Length: 157
Image (cartoon, rainbow, N blue to C red; front, side, top):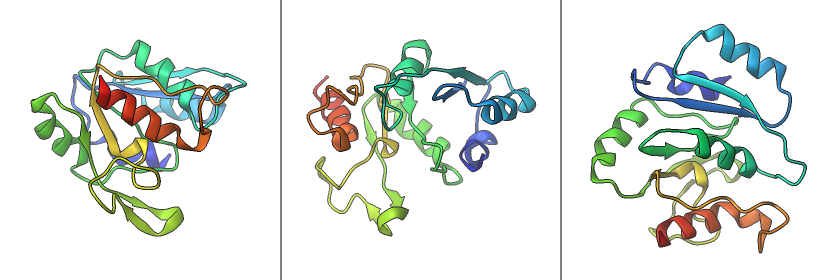
């Protein structure tokens, strides 16, 4: 709920926010429906091989019409002004990498301006709609590094 409320007031009329439930999520569905906001799109997608929401992100990206994608997990929040900053920087049509307050390790990522293990995450990465896909859990070389793999593939494109 905090995730959704963190960016809702900064949405513009032409924005879309896809909320994808990992299978049946009646509380999330009810919350989105109660907000009655045409910019919010709720769907459910279950994949028994999915971990970390990778299949759900790919499912949403196939449906979205956005020029840019920003990924927000259900335990993350946007800071005030984040979407305005993205809109301003997004005019250059290049991938954007923002710093993130990473609570599990009580640190800020990135530590250095490098795309490498333990230094980046998918929530930090905002990209034009010309991107790679998150690898299914079962196909990833190292499933815990799926954000890094997605970022590297997208930067290659």
